[in-house]
Length: 83
Image (cartoon, rainbow, N blue to C red; front, side):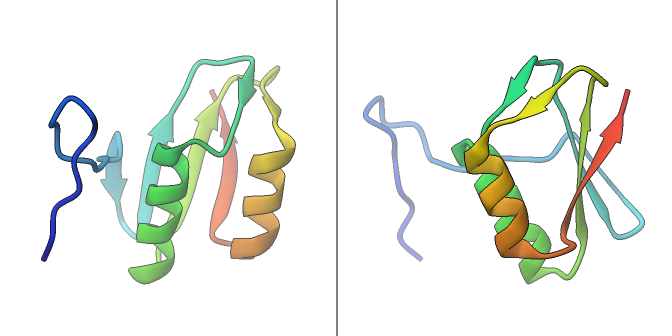
């Protein structure tokens, strides 16, 4: 396996905030959530492991069009959960 590095020579990857009973949790306190590298990588992990990616965000958080497109692409894998 070839490990990819950032420009500062840090291995690229991400870890969820929690994994509980078939769910992967990512907790963010933001006003707008985009399909960042972190979100895309966790969505890939959820699809591969047949789990759900739960985005725990404030009620007022808006999803950016890039994240909405990722949700459409992955089907029912990504779900929103309010704080």
